[in-house]
Length: 143
Image 1 (cartoon, rainbow, N blue to C red):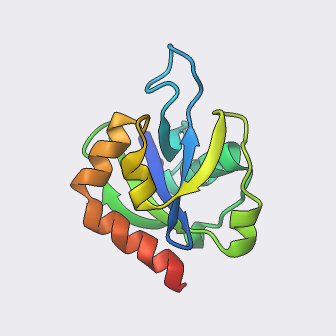
Image 2: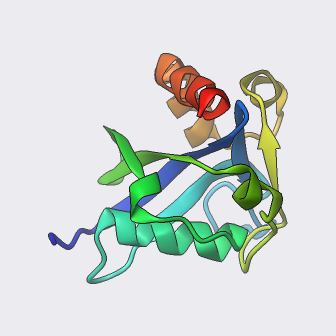
């Protein structure tokens, strides 16, 4: 396996909703007190998928498999990749706040549009890739 550097994020979805994390209210971090996608930095020696699996577990207390991590796009900033993860109902029901952030919660795309504190990075990514996000959220309903 090729080891990577950079960041990894996911459209973590269930029943047409995307899971977001309310970031800590710490002025020393990027986008404090804003809702953002699940993910983060890939640590030394990890592949993007390994880093994503670790980040999902750390942030949501849910263990996902490699098979659930479907590559969807390269990120245009901070060398990285974006994946789609469709949580089954048992996984979605077991989501709880991990060791980072203030809260984790599922949102529809319309609810995300109305969030005043959606991270600017996520807002820009969703705007630029809206059709892709819609497609992933729709797939999470039909699977």
